[in-house]
Length: 317
Image 1: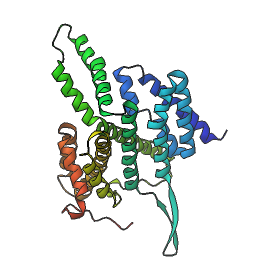
Image 2 (image 1 turned 90 degrees about the vertical axis):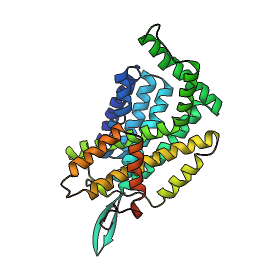
Image 3 (image 1 turned 180 degrees about the vertical axis):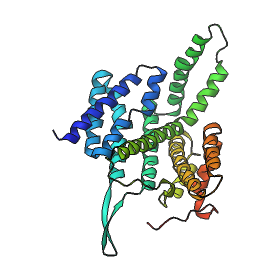
Image 4 (image 1 turned 30 degrees about the vertical axis):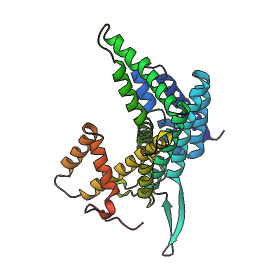
């Protein structure tokens, strides 16, 4: 067996063990599932290529099917394994172009990777909706049951005999979960995917395995079609039923993509400023403490860049 595929099998085993430990239901396990499970696959993909990452994704699914359940294995493969393989492939995708009689390697733009990640996030949110229920009433019933089985029971266990959620509060929280279901899934998944790809890049660059030059992240730009796609998604969110919820999943992912561009703009335009560190600290602190309002504000900076005074002067591509 080639060494890269052997590395993939090892990475898949690590990813499967992380996933299995997360399925124990503890808070620590949940955090491991959310933040670390795709990382071994991503490191393998950037360090040894997408075939190694594909081997890791498939081997992880096989191990999870044995240790947990086949359904859990399918979840890992579709939501974590295969998307990470795709992102690893795109990150290392390149072509040789002839410029001024000199050959030059041109790498797949990071902005396009961000855009594709947002589309994948919307598709996975749609899949999560359809796998949970096939209509609004079914989704409402399923989320209400989840709310009662986990949150209400945990509240009752923490405060025996204390006040719990009444019918009106249950109905309110259920409606809030219904409205935000697709958007929350797409946003969380895209955050995890981008974070793991960045961490994998850092690990492989430090170890000397990353063949792609480290990109200038403050220069990332999205494809020109993204504002139109975002506008269409926002308009479709006003449709009733599942169509509106599906559109909200895509719109939320597109907002996160523009948020990343907004952060890139702020990093770019604050270069050389004496207050740069303080400005960036305030921006990131607001994203932690004042979301979603601060996140929308930064996303609007990225969306409005072509007509904004904060427009970057980027080098020719």
